[in-house]
Image (cartoon, rainbow, N blue to C red; front, side, top):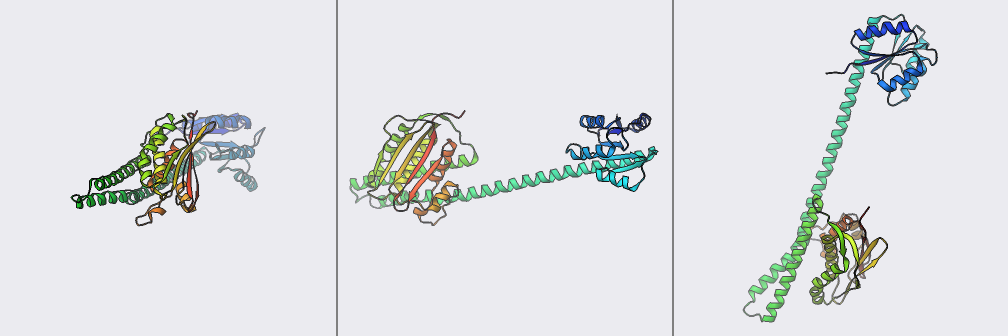
Length: 384
């Protein structure tokens, strides 16, 4: 059911007010009255009428000035104003329209004409409101469609990245694993126990690398879907460093790389244990992967007032400025067929996201042919 239109009559003549008030009420409108400019502006603010009938000749402020004031206010500038006046000069009518008036009714009033003009302007305002509502709906649908388009583009990019990482990060260890198994099966009868053990250790290393990449893919997928829980608490950074050094020691010995830690004391940070473990694991794995035989990989930590900063440094091949930019802006890609040493794998991309999820930041210092240092921070205290 539609609401009854509210009409405000502004006129200093009580007789005119009473007659017009009764006529409009009988015609089905809700009517309010005001006899001067100040009272009129107060009532407009209170009742917000659908239409105003405004006398021009007022004792304190004339109708032109009242209309100008209403049109300057955003909350009242769309209310139609019909002037009521005995003035018939064209200049006065033009002055009224310039003040923002919608129409003119000449006194003495013909009440059927008043009703017809009120009805016409109310219908016009209703159509304008419907047009505005329709435009808002169209704009909202456009924004909704644009957002859906962005989400679809993001999903497509995510899918392409996912397949790219499967090709670049999972295929090499899988190929190594299958190659070692085939070679072992083909030469099983003539291999010595030492040779079999050596090949099995290679199979184990390839399987562990494959498992690590699989875990990275699962973490990355959960991050993209927003389903990765963040269980923050106090963690012992030294404990995680020692655990990962033990885990990577066999690979370091195999490649004859010096792997050392300068984290000698208990250092506490406030972060997610599993996330920080994944960060350290991936940074050490990356450092060992791109450091040649005889090189060095180290991990150290420095405590500040509010943060703990960890450094994973290597003497490897270094990174180009383009690679650093892509990594820091989450734009790294790894298309199939690229030189493995030029790619930025899922592990580093995952590290960047996990560090930010823990409330930290990532810095990279690198020089081609000299090595790279990844520095990342973790908060020491929970956020307030």
